[in-house]
Length: 350
Image (cartoon, rainbow, N blue to C red; front, side):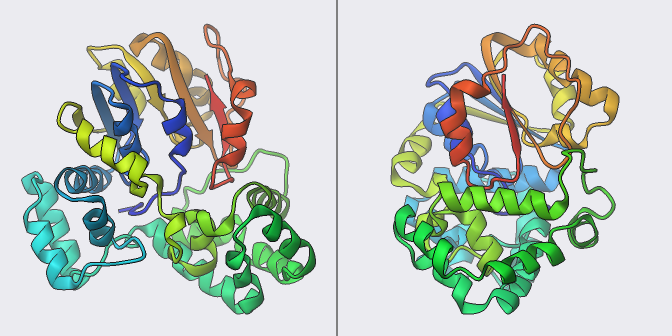
């Protein structure tokens, strides 16, 4: 399992998706990236992933949303402030309407974890457990005070006057490079950078933008980077918010959720229906040179009129994309893009 919590802020897609869409095509990931979209009550969500394990964790999220209250959902997954006991989690798991394969997979995972939370069991989340320890060792308690700020104004003053800037840059210099991420996480598949920046400049710019535009204690990604976990409930991913959880749960009575094991571009070509919204995650960063130029055209046959596509890229930005027939809408959504809480992605909206 690569992702158990998630590495994207789905508030972007949530705010872009129009209510009552006909069909949504999305990369599944941890499930957290599409679960909030249920609150917009599309007729159907088609979740696609190359990893069967990511489809299992997506199914676990959907079925726990269906079965639990918001408080039970957060406690089952291990979001703060309250986590279920091992016995409570085991009993709750037994009530979920999972497929046989998903149930078997998670029964083993939970047993191996002594029925503790699996929120940080993904390879990506485990990597940030390690990186955050190095961060805390170098930056110490002074940097952790960032999360005591309760307004952007207080946070800005703290960053300008008390934040250990030199120690933080040392953290980025040591950890923010291909060698570290390749050895800990990507195993030879780390995206080849083509953005023209050094790794230090890239990560410094990305984090400075996050520090300016988002409150650290409300940001799950910044909490992972400094603590290896979410400590402050205000940073929980957005499906945990009452105003999203309740309508998402209610929508499951009518919305069809379909799981497809495969490549999202191939899946798009095999659909028998038109989709109104496509959430590609950072798939374009991992395409070869030919495929990255044509991915939009490969999606075209499955798109309804005025469909929206949200595409992220990480370090490797697609060049010379054939966007004929598409309108790039980034300028219309700058506020949404700027407030995205991970900050390392180049985001394109078509």
